[in-house]
Length: 181
Ligand SMILES: [Zn+2]
Image 1 (cartoon, rainbow, N blue to C red):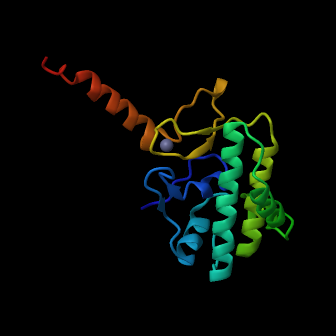
Image 2: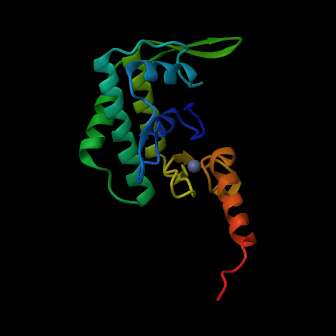
C-alpha cells in the first residue's frame, strides 16, 4: 500500500502509517526498509535514509508515543507521561542540518536525526493551542491531521481517500429503496 502524506505535519503523517487503528490496524512500516522508503517519500525529510533495526524500533516507539499524545490532545485530556518521556527524550538529541539555497531549504542527516526532527515537529504542533488537531470523520480511518482550512471546517484527512468515500456511501444510502413492510 502506498504511503499518503495528508496530515500537514511529518509527525502526524508518521502516526498515519498505521491505518484503521481501532478496528483492523494495518501497519505499513513492517521492516526497516519500509521506514527508509517513508522518510524518502516525505517532502519534509531528507531524500535518503538508512534504517538499522535498532533505529527502526526507536522510530516505531516514537510513532506510538506521538500518536498517544496527539490523541490526548484531540480528546482534551492530560498527556500520557510515558509517551511524553519518549517524545521529549528523542527531541533532545542532535537533529537535521538545514541548508538554504536558491532552491529553498534542504535538510540532511541520518535517521536518528530524522527522528529528532519528527519529535520536535510533534512538540511544535502539540504545544500550540491554536493548532486544530482532528481525527478523520470517516470512522474506520482514525488518521490525525492538522486542519488549516479557513474556519477549520475540514472533516476528512483527505477528500480522495475518505471524504469522497463517505459522501458516496451517504448517497447510496439515500438511493436505497425503503425496506418492504
Ligand atoms: Zn481519513
